[in-house]
Image (cartoon, rainbow, N blue to C red; front, side, top):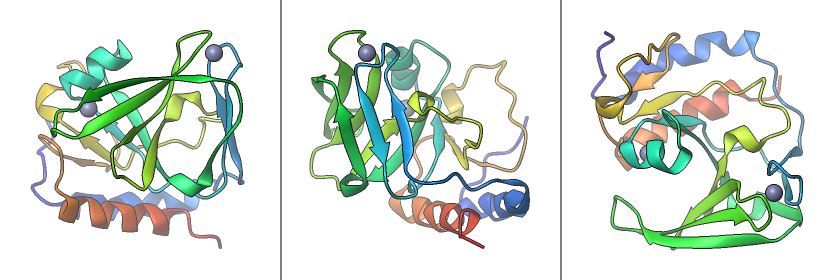
Length: 177
Ligand SMILES: [Zn+2]
Ligand SMILES: [Zn+2]
């Protein structure tokens, strides 16, 4: 079992694989399963993380969710109608998830007052470049979940001060050459 770092220092090694990673070309395109909703992301996302909390397990019907925060002005719905589900998230913050009105697929979410939208990374057309830089809520990760690589791991949700170096490392990872 890997140890869970108390700070984001574990992420420093995460940049070592930068040369092996191909920067995706913008815009990034994606959509729901039935294709009714299509979106475009016109700036590099801010981070990619996996969350293993029990809410994410229930919301995704799977072992974890892949969150891809994007600056809100960079996220554009090209077509389709989304339906919202509003609820109060674990951190006590009102949150909305947006689903396709036809197939019901969850495409993105947002928190009240946030300048970011959180895109479900698996809805991208090209997921080949996606490698999470951090794993949240490892305390509730499925026991068979074995992580490789050098992504940072957190027992619960990292604090804002812990997330900042992650965002910085992610930005350096995708800097144009
Ligand atoms: Zn759909
Ligand atoms: Zn979660």
